[in-house]
Length: 481
Picture 1 (cartoon, rainbow, N blue to C red):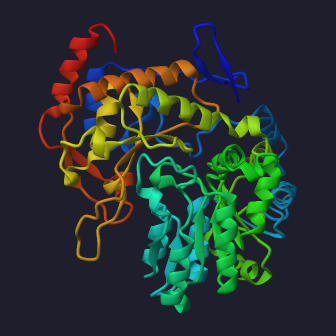
Picture 2: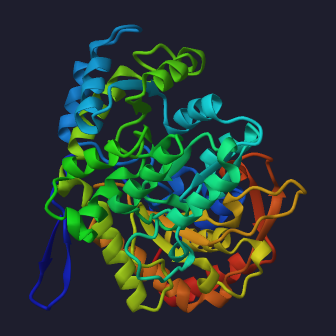
């Protein structure tokens, strides 16, 4: 990305790409939006996309592909076994990560499933800088436990620490003393998803890897959000500002034993993969790929997606490609902060994260502040965001709600999808909502699944607050949608 300053002094990021294929959007009237979200059980996951104006639910599988990726899909070698497309993808993996062995999988959680099945058993303790929902579910399903040990600044919404995704090295050493025989691996997540897309530093992962080597325990990297983390290392970590994105990637990979990723995020394609230099790990995990995913040269993916992934991974090494998301997020966050809207700072990757605990502090904790705020945002704007808070947690062994460390609404920024005018629209509607935040109420369970409930659980408003919000919006905007 490139930032410019216009004549009135305003500065903003400029897209370093041009749009050549477009998709029509719909901005339906607010009355229809209210009906749509109620019909969806107050769960933005259950909205029909035709009722969504700006889809900021996630960047997973919805990033824009490059012209090179799209054209590569026409060259796919459609074969069950031994496809040339697989070997192109394998070459990209080897070039970028410098890992010898590669296993394909249909997406990131499939990689987590295989890794967990191989390494986790009853009583296992897996230290990590922070959990992700599916990662935790795979580990706990196998009767293991997650031990979250980020640095203290990770829990400070407005800390100025530039790498809030760092793992606490002192606590990791203590964990090895207390749980050594029960730690199958240590996990680092690039761009901690649930605490605002916050990155780790290269110096931190090097230190963590050193501790893992001392204890003969593998370090596993979830590289799904690696592209944002690479950008932040280059921009924020002085020691590596003169390194290329490729050099930084290889330094990170050198300090890991296993790297896995969701290509729905990394590479702007759809699929996933696991890579390692450890032949023993590779052969053990390899046995599960045909059982759960497909043959070893497609792993549940279409060859067309594999062609796009091979190119997309190389595209990720281009700083002008990976900078667009973080710079748009930084702009959106800064503008909202100017308007008094509480956000996670410093701005991280993946999306702009609103602090629901301050935005709607009047809502009771067990009435799901972040989820309620996501409902309100959709009603007044047609923007679909994602709750990243208590609703995304799972109940404890006694059936009690577990209050999340943070209550965030994530407004994801899929790569090269939105324009600056759309970002300004989002800023305006969210600012108006903050000025009328007292109209937002809570929601409660109507139908609660036992596993990954945030995906398809259904809720309902605790009272008629959505109608009051609608009436105030219509009064203030009159002819506007």
